[in-house]
Length: 196
Length: 250
Ligand SMILES: [Zn+2]
Image 1 (spheres, protein in one colour):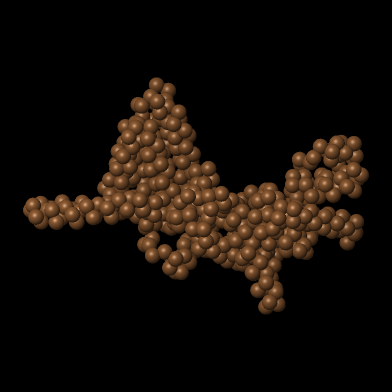
Image 2: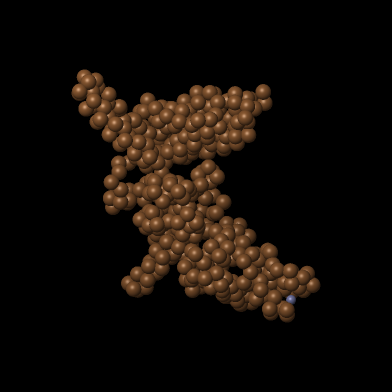
């Protein structure tokens, strides 16, 4: 199963976010146009996150769609001070946690998609090698650490926002990022020393 | 703090590039910890650049799927084209229906028929009525301007959503509506001196809107009718921007 990949710089064209800021007051009323804006505003970053967590584009698509369907069902309960981004990521995180549980329950791991890396110049191959190692190291992290680290790096989320998204405290969010970084550094340092 | 403690601090920092004073001072004096910091930083950068499995769908298709699922679940009892933000207006319509009933009775008695027609959202004439009533209701030039800006924003959002649904008819309707709004209605207020600041804001917004709609049109190249309407909106935005800027210079 060879899947094409997109580099972050070639991500899909999106609209000018400034002009399309989701409107919370309209969302609370169940306004479908405002909801469509919300989808357009956040679907790509949600996809990026769950795709990295699941390593599977089919699962990631399903999870993103589930997230928005669930979000709409809860939309009238939004409060004026709700952090929309953290709220959506929290719904996505719950959906992802369910996905992980079901997957373990069936004891059938979905195949992690192998990134289609063509053989190219030497430095490119080396770069791919580093990426592959890094990807493997991330995949071995406990789910919660991985989820936190990716929110920090990909979404530039502060620990406070991350705490909402992960349904935990700010300190726990910080601790998870700390553990993830520590573990990755250990793994990569060992790999570097290991001639294989 | 010793080197180990410094590294712990680096690992638990929110932003590895912005560390607290004591840590930063240690780093200046200690090359080993400096290397450690830059290694963590580089690792994070690489993680950020890691490739993601290609999405199966574009944002537009995703939106379509999500809306499809919402409609199937029958979360809403509304048809596709429902301006929920006109709810207030609809309240007003109900009131006018009540008034009409009274009038009807009155008319029967007096031999006079007085039934107001509900506003039709599916035609340019209907939207024009909505537009006029929104702008005319405002009791100052400034309020009128704000109403006009709000109407433009609403219509742009709707156009984007209709485009995402590939709803050719309604994107075209929005293009017709916006063309009129951005020309006739902008020009009515363009000479009001005290609106200069707000006019500049709107001109900037229109400039952004132009590029936004041009880009959107190129995304819809497979659907020429939708793309055509989107280009018309882009051009109407650009045109209005230029007229506003000229008026501001005068
Ligand atoms: Zn040191």
